[in-house]
Image (cartoon, rainbow, N blue to C red):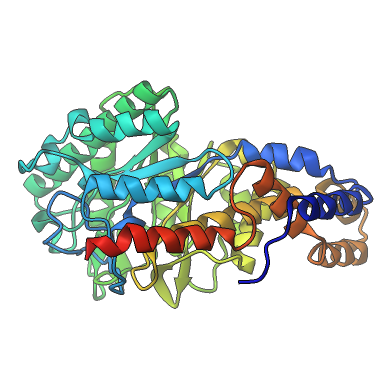
Length: 425
């Protein structure tokens, strides 16, 4: 590795960058202060390949696939929490954790998903309190015998459908418990794999059943001060290539009429679609938005987030539109082909970097040029911003937050792998 920059070098580079941005009307100190207040919800399932602790031997099903076999996967809740603590130490700011229902702790006793309760997640709550984290939550409507035929909340069998309704109700109660105990609202997000591999003869009936199931789930009151409800769409998946019940159009209509939170996952749309282009459209009709930041490659493969144009455009749209207070940002990828802790750190830091780049834009100037019809000036300034020294501002942010600057975090992760992950076999 190259020699690390000194504290003096970082501070000097920041001073020069601050002057450059100030000449364009951008206050870098204010941008960093705003960035410090943004909490990213990290996803627990990156650390164990979405296996959970209900029945890790069963494996994944429901259109979900984690590929790779890099050694060191977390096998217990304590190992997963240990890995997460390492990740949070390497990220500037204070963030959150997103849990799935299969990450319960039941003392080795089998608990059906429609019978889970707050007591099965109390260790997570205690840990989150110690770490100063908020918790978010998800029902797990996959990797279960009653989901093996590809249908859950839209299932034609009323008994199966009732089971999943009860599971989602239980999850909302758990989310409410998280919010009450931790003093920050939990977002409980529902995603289901329901759909057909081949062309259906009836597209309407499954969506009517899904609408009814969701209405029955949300009919049970929970305190919105502690739990907020979100629903997540998908274009297609393994086993649902031709038809997905919970499409984007379905959930947009549902959220607009039921006043829930709409979740947009970056990997759940056609490869030519940009989520950034959807933000300003849906925010006209919904109160809040939940983002699952991921990287789809040809299909919904949930690769580690890179600092790509799509991620930059998404964060720029959130900042330009003034949506930061109405948008919740979470991660959703699971790569088992590389070191899992490093995957978390790379993806999380890239999202934060993209947010910083967006916060360092002279938004008012860009919009004024556009409103004046000076599209040439708008394009010229947008392109000029790509070469501005945002990296110096990021390095200073990391220094101020007492986390590794540049590639220094990788040294710590490699040491952790040698001392901890390698011992797992």
